[in-house]
Length: 256
Image (cartoon, rainbow, N blue to C red; front, side, top):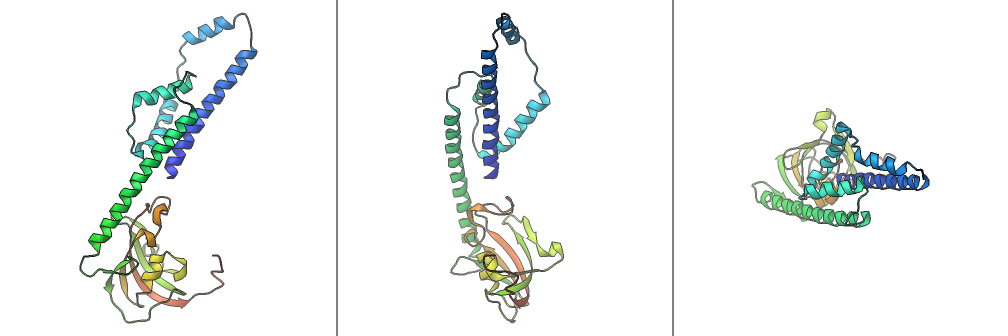
C-alpha cells in the first residue's frame, strides 16, 4: 500500500511541477513583448535540446519500479503520450483530477482483488493444515501441535512469559527469532497478538509448541514489519516456554 501511495504521490508531484512550470513560462511570455520574440520562439521550436539520458532513465526506472507490481496492463504508447502531453504543454484528453480519479479507482480494484486472493489462500492453508496428524484447532481458529510435551504450570493472560521462538511465514521466510539474537524474549501475554496470548496459555513450562496463527489473531489486513509480514498472512511460531513471571505493572502502565 505504501508503494502505491508513493507512486501516486510521485506522479502527482512530477505532473504538478510540470504544470506549474508551464504557467510560470506563460506569465513571463505575456510580460515580455519585444520585436524579436516571435523570431526567438521560432528558433527555439526548431532547436532540439538534448535531455540528460541518465536522468531521464532514472525517472523511468523509479516510476517503473513502483508501477510494475500493480497488476495493471499498460499501453506504453498511451503512457508516453500522456507523459509528453504534460511535459510539452499539449492538449490532453482529460484533466489531472480526472486522471488521478481513474488511477485511484483502478488501484482500488486491484487491491480488492489482491486482498481476496490472499484471504482465499489463507483459508485454504488452514483447511489443509487442520487435517494433518497432530494438528489441533481451537474455537478461535488457532491451530497448534505439541513438539515437546511437559507437565509444568501454564501462564495466564495477566502474567509474563520468557520464551525462545522462531516466527516464519508459510513459505519458510523467518521474520523474527530469539535464537538468532541469542537472547530469550520476555513479554506480558496481554500485550501481544491474540494468537500468542491464546497459544501460550495452552503451554506448560518446559514444553515446545508450533503455533499456526490466522491473520485475524495476528496482524490482519494491514500486515506488519514494513511489508515483512504481508496482509492476511498466516504466521507459524515454534515456541519454547522457559519461565513464567508475574507482570510488573510499572513496566507496562495503563495505555501502553
